[in-house]
Length: 310
Ligand code: ACO
Image 1 (cartoon, rainbow, N blue to C red):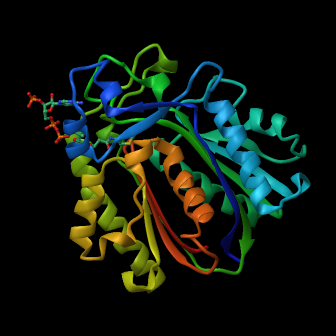
Image 2 (image 1 turned 120 degrees about the horizontal axis):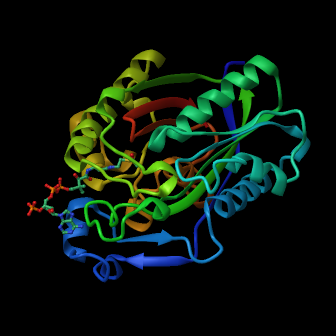
Image 3 (image 1 turned 180 degrees about the vertical axis):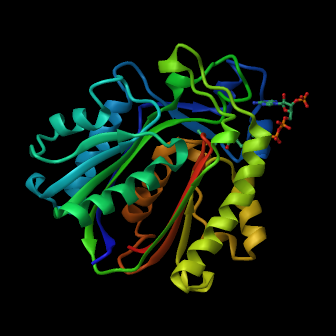
């Protein structure tokens, strides 16, 4: 048994919705510019009392309920985040407390920006294989709005807040993983514990993303001995519709094989892939037995890909 099976998934969104027109109240921008350059139409930002922690807890509760999982069966909890509420305790410890999960299991946060959920998923798999355990609770949760300079139009229109969570069990199933890092391209900077807002070299990230997604997809297909025709869904980190469209063109596959929801949520960093998984499962688009490719990329720069059957 060296793969994983998705038992359940859930997501959580804050209550405050900001349209592109709302963003034009903060910076000189327009619905037309944001929609054409990114495909984003709206995003959710945390309101008073909503944080990375509250979103992570809500998404985790829903994933546990969807999985029908007893809390005693959880063997590890990992929260992928770059916007945890506290330096310590970790967001994962706060989820552990809220859900009254068992003692004697590893519970921690992992930071790899928008690739974080896939780093976390592969880490959880390794821990389950090494130490046993019936299932892992893996979460991506972000309050990106807490990192943004609302006067910087280069960044503030691109991001949103959300959490997605999934419960995975070890399974005798196929599994391929690739990842990478370009520390020498550390061009995105989140301020030290939010005393500085994040900055970004958008065009460099764009170029990096449009080459990394197809290369990662190809590497996974080669590793697993498959072609794209064998794959039901490619679920990429949701940063920009043009990045996904360029990857579709490069790979020469039907566009509807790539899931897209960034028009509604914008870029939710580590939350975007589990949010997509949970939303697709809820709507019936994602069903047991399908083969999916997941691709994350982002600040660091980091990237990762997983091909697995759900
Ligand atoms: N509204 C209006 N104009 C804007 C805005 C805005 N919100 N933002 C930038 N502009 C202006 C720029 O100032 C520039 O004006 P100038 O020509 O007078 O200098 C003009 O629009 C064009 O800017 P470009 O940077 O060339 O625009 P581009 O087409 O490259 O799109 C974008 C910019 C959307 C940022 C794109 O490069 C992109 O999506 N990059 C990837 C970013 C990304 O996904 N980062 C996240 C990775 S995940 C993570 O690590 C958290």
